[in-house]
Image (tube, rainbow, N blue to C red):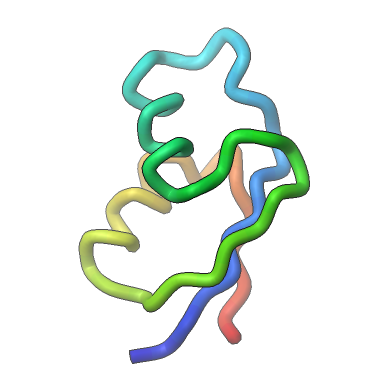
Length: 59
């Protein structure tokens, strides 16, 4: 599988609780924090849920 780099670019302040939990589950929580993960179907669904808060790059 390919890897992706996920970077949080927007704050979770005033966002629904489920979006805040998704950001935490991705390993993020602060703006400009990045994580590298394997691109799976589950991860793609999580990214779609918070796509307006993160930036995704293929590695």
